[in-house]
Image 1 (tube, rainbow, N blue to C red):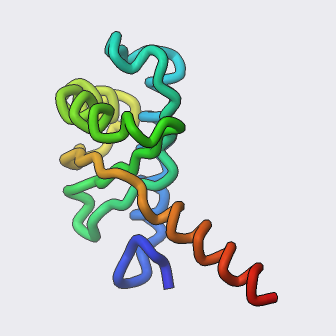
Image 2 (image 1 turned 180 degrees about the vertical axis):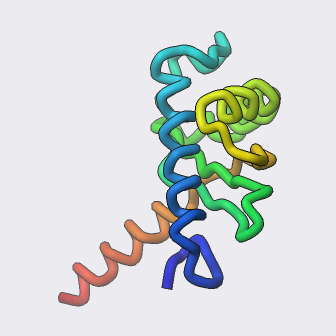
Length: 121
């Protein structure tokens, strides 16, 4: 079972989620989307989850400096309109999904679980 989805996602959901992840990641690396307060912040977008109707994309965010995550989320939320326009231009979807940003806790849970399994072995 996939940790992000309650039901198995369709191939289309997976492709669109992956495409959104690539567009958003590349936009910050190439500074297509820029915010001065994010200049020295190392952030990654490990997962994107999209609803079955393809109308809402949840982008998971993680930062190297865990203390900055809340501030980064606020900045990303303020950039949502710009990010959505970029996704619309790059992906040419019939409907561009609403974008939401949340802190990635899934990766941390997976790491903790793997550590526990290693300790048992």
